[in-house]
Length: 309
Image 1: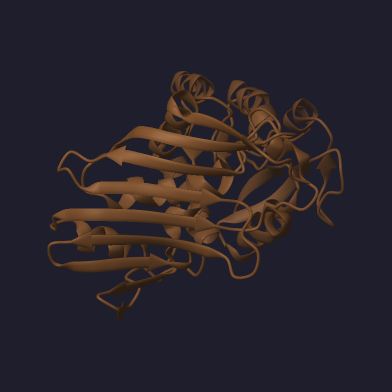
Image 2 (image 1 turned 180 degrees about the vertical axis):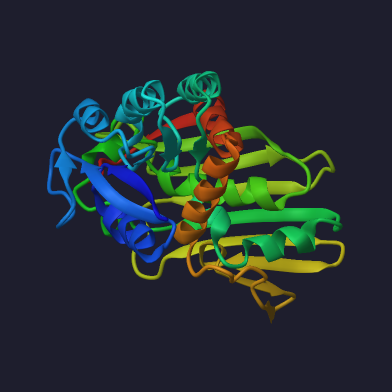
């Protein structure tokens, strides 16, 4: 029998990914939405999460697709009501919020899931397995996309807590923290802020690797034309290129078949994982990608550049 789920925040990512993934799954039934704007046709909508929680005691899982800043209050309300919570990336506006939510979930005995959809890209697992026994020499992340294409009219991304270019950049960092066999930490960063914005539009990061490998990342939200989401890793046994956001993999230029194709798409895999967490009563709150972002804001040199509209 399908488990009832509510979806809070019906924006672009919810319509493009969450709603279709839920509809295609035999494990879930979208039973309610929570939004002050247009909901999903044929689904009961509420403008307030407390009203939904009171009216729908049979909905025990809430998936939150709101921007990061208002997400904590929604998640906390759901946990207090004894509901399981699924968090779109990033899982919160601050690390402290995320730690608080995890502690609340453990005390309430409910599951909470900090999702990182890019880790579910088709070739990420194959890349992780190939790198597991290699000696890394150099790794370069190049994540270039057009903010006008991916966030049309979304002003929250430029406000405090909106992350700016780290909204896509954290996807790359989620892959980095998944595929490397040893952790890295930030050594230096440069963040470029448009004169009229509160969040960066570009960033360069340099990491310290315990084996001395060169590890850095370039994020830029001003890329027009072809979009570019690549990770290149040079090792003692060859060079790996994970391209198209983790969808494709090559070793020394030769394509490698994806190792995990049981489910088609990143978000169906996330919802399958949520089923497992709820059934086993487990929690998955890996915050390692968000740690790198927080470190970049703490350690990064700020450069003010021309306004961006």
